[in-house]
Image (tube, rainbow, N blue to C red; front, side, top):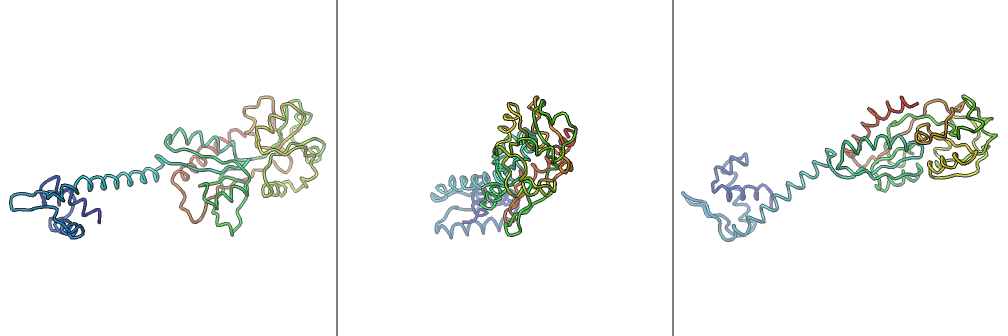
Length: 298
């Protein structure tokens, strides 16, 4: 049963005219007649009685009319819903967020939620390897991490957010007196490490060209906020972007020699799935608003 046949039938029934139905359906009168004939043949019954002066529905036609209208209405509802999704009016955007990128994604998400109030953001925070696995399982739409995916993972990526990693400490910590820190100075102090995963750890190690295993790591935590809370109460240091301490007035940051250059995170998505319109708009916010915000902060 074709929708154009039902549409022609409903229009003839509503207007009692084949010619008016043809005009409103943007087709010809013979085409309308053919649609009605095809529908009657498929249903094996007469739907319309047509005389030289009148057009009336048979009993079968009367029974079909409300059902045909409901089918057409549901069809339009489907089209409107998909159109809305494609234009980011509604739906869900599922994001994976790596440890170092979280405050920048938070900034973009706040703008996105205000601009597109009918789109729900579902954010998953975790290590890069876990987020890549979630991408492959199609549990998230896009991930932001420091790593670059392996070719066999089927993941596409692009540069997303530039950032710098600093040493974070309480403002009374001995290292807070220095303008820039060397690796040898870091080795003298206890460290609480963010749980960033092996790929990111190796990436940082390449930047610094130092053996990070020499650091006096006393704890590894998977929550940046918990690590920062510990810094307020103790004499430890950690390594995070400066933006993390925006709401921690008793903490301060210092650049590290070898880590004072800009690093780049990546946005990832599966190659076998078209990128959602909402994801594209989220990336636009990052490029046009979040990155300038980062530059102003740092």
